[in-house]
Length: 339
Ligand code: WQD
Image (cartoon, rainbow, N blue to C red; front, side, top):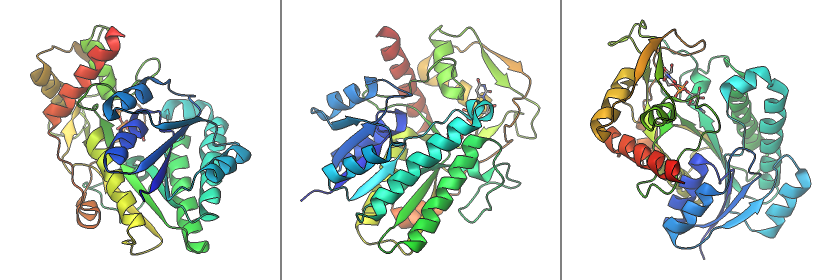
């Protein structure tokens, strides 16, 4: 009897990739999403990749009754929670919108899960580490106070899961701290669909390469790094999705060593902004028009993961070469530009 996993926010970028990998690993997947930050493009792509539709429920996780009804309609063995607002800048201008949505939805999911023996996997972020003095970061690194309400909701949700797993018998949870997810499925049928002007680097690069944006602004080349631009750990979205399958397997396979565990999900390899742009141009043969602009407030100079705990305990490691990831992002951009 295959296990059933709920993917909340599963119509989105990372959720749709996780849905594909879970299904291909033999899990029954139910996707629930309120479509507030995406349309059905990615779910349509998931259907094409899998050759069959996945069960989809349009609903809002801030509505207690909707969450309880959903959990009563299926017997979930695990839930992966992506449903949250995630625009850092918007969270600064509309903090209450972020605290209400991101915290209420997660509390409802944890409450429904603990009452039914459903394991909880939380989509966290390396943003909880803030500015680190000497990367790479391990899970033992202290979290810094968040630099945005968005980042604060990630820390608060980690604490909600940690404290609930400690208090409620039978509840277990894992938080995966993603570094910088990038790229698209090799089929080019699912990928990132930022609404409006992209905040993140790679979507801005691909939209500039596609002529949708005139010029990529590189936010600062005077950082204390080898080429003066910021260093990040860019993790391929398919590799990231596979980490979720490994984490679900750990939770449902009785392999957890405590009720709550945290794992960094990154490549362990720092890449600069300039290096990413150059590698994109080499991978695609497309020139990216760019200029050096002032630093962006809130950017950390350098952060990358020490992923050894995930390698050891999840049996997972990033495998996709950066050049392939960048090529997939470009193929996806060309696909969506044609739609
Ligand atoms: C990466 C680098 C920019 C755009 C954010 C969130 C984090 C997580 C991942 C959700 C930085 C530079 C960017 C551009 C640029 N999201 N850049 N020109 O800021 O590391 O992390 O996304 O969990 O929470 O904070 O990612 O892609 O925005 O920036 O030069 O047009 O690219 O300055 O150095 P970031 P990013």
